[in-house]
Length: 222
Length: 393
Image (cartoon, rainbow over all chains, first blue to last red; front, side, top):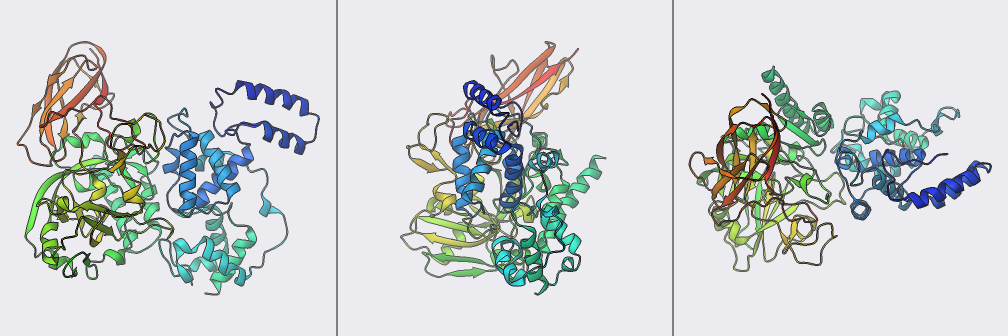
C-alpha cells in the first residue's frame, strides 16, 4: 500500500511528514489493510494520491471536464494549489458535473501532477490512465446481462448526455442518437460509452453499467 | 513532400469545417488527426484539440502576410453549428440604443462602401507560457499572432444607418458560437463607442482576398485594428449599442489586467483591473530558428515588429545575449496596424552557442521590456524575443 504521487519527482519540502509517515507505516505493517489505509490517509500530504485515487481522478477528468475541452488543455498547466482551487471551483460553477468528493480528488490529482515544478513534458492524462492497471473491474462481476429500464434512462440521459446529444436525442454538438444505427450494435454502443470515441469522453467512471443499460433502453425506445 | 503535407493539413482543416457543416461529432476527431498537443504537424502547432486552438510556427513570419490556412486559431467554444452561419439564413442584427433596429444579410452588408486594410491580429494570451509564476490558460508561446489583409464594411457606417442614441457608451458583439453546456457563460464582448466609430474598425467578410474561413469567423467578424483579438468577435450575429460596458464573465473578469503593476504571483489583486485593449509594442525573430547551427560569416536575422495603433520607430538586435544592440533595417513602407518586417545582417564570427535577441520601440518612445509585467491572466506578453543558435566552424 505504498502511496505515490501520480508522477515522480514530487515531494520536495515535506521530509518531516514523510519521515513520520514512514514510521507510522512501519508500525502499521502488521495491522489490517483497511486500518493502514485509514491511518496513512490521515497522515498523508494533500498532494499524494493512491494509484486508485489517481485513476479515479483521471477518469473523472476524461468524463466530466472533456465534455467542454480536451484534456490537453489541462495537461499543459503548471499551477500552484491556490490557482487550481480557483480553477476547479470555476469549472464546477460553470456546470462540470463533479460532486464535492469528486472535485476534491480531481483537485488533489491536479495539484500533485500539474504543479509549477513538474516536468515540461508529461504523458497525457489518457496515457497515464492506460498505463495504470485498474484494481478491479466492477462490471466484470458475472451477474448476467443487464436489463435496461427506459423510465430511469430518461433522467440519466438528461443529466449526462443531453448537453451534447440534444433534447430528445435529436443531436447537437454530438450526433443524433434517436434511431441511430449504433443502438442496434450493442457492442459498439457500450464500447463508445465506456471508453469514449473521438471528442466524446469516456463515461465508464461516471455511469454504472446499469445506468448505461437504462440509457440504452430509453434511446432504443425513441 | 512539404506540399503533400500542406495539402493533407488543408484537407484536415477542411474536414473540421465539413464535419461542423454536417453538424457531426467528427470535428475533434479531425483535430485529433493533427496529433498530439504542442506538436507542429503541417503549418500549425496545436495547443488544444477541442475547442481547436493552434498557433503559427514563427518561421511563417518571414512573409509579410500570414496565409489563411497558417493563421493562428483561437475560440472559446469552437465554430458554431453550420445552420447558425449558413449564408442563406445568416443575418446580422443591430439593436439596443439605436433609432431603428437593422437586420441585414451578407449581400446587403456588401453594399456598404468596402474598405481593405492590413492589420495584426494577436491573442491577448500570446506568450502566456513565458510568464513566471505560470498562470492558467492556453500556454501560447510566440505564434498566436498573424498579419492579414481584411476587407469589409466600416462598423461606423452601419451604426450611422441604425442611428445611435446619445446615451450610447459601448457597442456589444455576440457571435453564433455556443458552449457545450448551457451553464457556461456566452462569449460576449463590448468595445467603447470611440473605437466602434473609428473609421478603421471593420466588419470583415474577406481575409487575404478570400472569403473569411469558418475557423476565422465566417461569414463576418469584427476587426479592431491595433487592439487585441478578443475584441474581434468571430461568427458575428448581434450588435447591441449599450449605455454601459457588457456585463458577464468575458468582459468583467476575463481579459483584464491590473491598471498598475502588481506583485508577481499574487492572487487576484486589490488593484483596479481594466480591459485589455491596445497591443503593446512587440517584435519577433522569424529566422534563424531556435537551435539552428550556422556557419561563420554573414547571417540574415529577420523578423517582424508591430505596435498596435502606433507605428514602429525602430528595431534593435543583439547577437551577444543582450550586451550590445544594433539597429535593424526596417523594410518596406509603414502601414498603420500592419506589422513591419525587419532585417539585420549579422557577421557570425565566434564559434559556439549564442543568444539572438530583438526589441522594438514605437513612435512614442515606448520600448519592449526584457520581461512583461506579470498579471494573473498572463496577458500582453511583450518581452524581448530570444532564441539560441550555434555557430559551428
